[in-house]
Every structure is written in C-alpha cells, then in structure tokens.
Figure 1 (tube, rainbow, N blue to C red):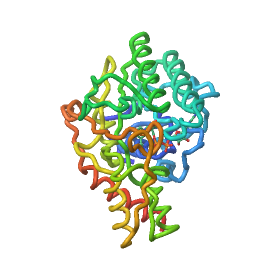
Figure 2: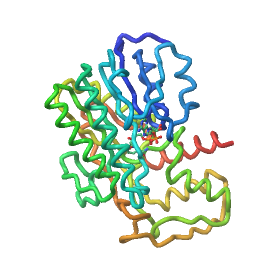
Figure 3: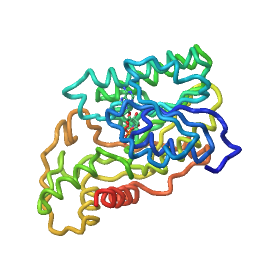
Length: 323
Ligand SMILES: NC(=O)c1ccc[n+]([C@@H]2O[C@H](COP(=O)([O-])OP(=O)(O)OC[C@H]3O[C@@H](n4cnc5c(N)ncnc54)[C@H](O)[C@@H]3O)[C@@H](O)[C@H]2O)c1
C-alpha cells in the first residue's frame, strides 16, 4: 500500500461489499486511510473486496445495521461513509417495509451509534429520487424534496435525520444525491436487465415504458467515487447536500441501442410495455432526471464521461465480467 499524507484517519464504510461501497473502499485505501468495511452481505459480494482484503489497512465486519449494536465498530472511527441500503426503487411498490427498515431504521441506528462514539463526519449516499417528478430541470440542491417512490421518501427521511443529528451532536454531514450510477461490480440495473434479456433472446428486447422511455442522467462509478472524495474533504462543519451526475441525459431507447451494439447484435425488435403513469417504467419511476452539479463542480470536480459514454463503458465492463 502507498502511504499517503492526505489521509491517516480511520473511516468506516457501510455497504462495503456493494457496488459503489466496494469501489469507495478501494479509493479510501488508495488515499492511505484505515478502512473498516461493514455489510450484512444481503446483496454485497465479498469478491468485490478481493483486492481490499489483501491490504493490512482494511478490516471487514459482517453485521446487520438494523438489528446489531453498531457502537463497538465505531471505536476510533472519525468518518463514516454510509452506503448500506435497499437501493431497489421498484420493490417499494409491493414491499413498503423494506425501505423503512433498511434505509430509515438502519440510518437511525448508525446516527445513534455515531453520536456516542466521537464520529466527526457522516457521509451519506442519497439519490436524485428525493426530488420526484420536478419540472425544475436541471434540478438544483435547493429544490423541494417531493419523492414519488417509497425509496425516495426513505432517503429524504434519512437526509432530514442527518441534518438534525449533525446539528444537535456537532458532526459534519455530507449528503450526495446521485444520478443513476453505472459500472463494474453493479448487479442490478437497466443494463443488466437488457443484457440478460438479449442473451435469452437476441431477436427481441422487452423494454419497460413507452417509447423512447424515461430520460435520465447516468454517471460512471469512478466519476462518482471521485466526487464523493472531493465533496467530503471540502466540508468540515455543518451539513452540505451535493448533486452528483453528468450534465446530459439519455433516453432508455439510446441505452438499448448501446447494449445491442456492444453485444454485436443486429435487427433487434424493441417491444415496449407501454409503461405506467404517462410512460414511466414502473410505479414510482421518475420520467425525467437531470441534476444541476454546479455546487460540486465549484469544489473542483468534473466527470470524465458523459451519460452515453458512462453507459457504453459500463456495458463493456459488465460484458467482460460475464464472459
Ligand atoms: N447504484 C445507483 O445507481 C444509486 C443511485 C443513487 C443512490 N444510490 C445509493 O448508493 C448506495 C449504494 O448503492 P449500490 O448500488 O452500491 O447498492 P448495493 O446493493 O450494491 O450495495 C448496498 C450494500 O448494502 C448492504 N446492506 C443492505 N442492507 C444492509 C444492512 N441492514 N446492514 C448492513 N449492510 C446492508 C448490502 O449487502 C449491499 O452490499 C445506496 O445507499 C443507494 O441507495 C445508488
């Protein structure tokens, strides 16, 4: 490991074995931090931490944030990066309890443990879904939060708790509202859905929604990780919310085209399901999403890839990992 003067602190990453969490672990280790990873492995995969596990500065704990006492893990920890969650927006339409438990209760448990153990900074992975179907596009951080999914509502509730805990117990809070994050180690999103369907039937692709589908911003996980590091280091007190995304957006139809091209297919028929509530893929699906990223850009961050480049690179990475 290369020792870096930038970071000698001890940090905790929840959801460490997940898609974004495992990349964040790698990046924090690269910065020279002592990293404690925590995950209940409900969706996380230990293979994602293969490289981290070789590093003496990394320790992994299997624990459930809803049912376990988190205080013992926080001894000596200065900063917590809280990424553990149920991130599946669609599941909220039939299971309203899971987002309440895995997102709201888990965050409450963590904040309770943080306030008693001297944690100085809480970094939280929120989502563009907190804004709901806003007409104010690109959406700024100051826009009211009007979520239309249980997932978005649960994240908005977490944000509110972080505000209050940081104010009352003198911690700094950094909230990142991510656009759709894509890339290596992801396990569930539209790219996986299309790849799986096209492997089953290379002639026809069922697409949720009405043509050309929802229009949203996508960001590659490596750009996302750089934003987390840059945005977090810029805040030492108070609570700051940052949007993290690219400056452009893309239709689902364009994503399907990219997947078809990257899989080397031709003449694929797209079968649109028609969608719900004016063309969304499912109940709770926001139809248009583009975030204003002026604030994080003012801290010196910019993405390397735009939405379509992020999607193309992610498709290549997923296909390479599934060979
Ligand atoms: N991927 C995206 O496009 C996206 C977009 C916006 C926000 N986010 C947020 O970013 C974070 C990471 O998302 P991801 O895509 O990496 O998801 P992921 O499912 O890959 O990772 C979440 C991790 O949390 C763990 N976990 C879940 N419940 C837990 C519990 N009770 N105790 C301990 N561990 C638990 C899971 O095992 C998993 O490893 C989430 O908070 C998600 O809501 C993701």
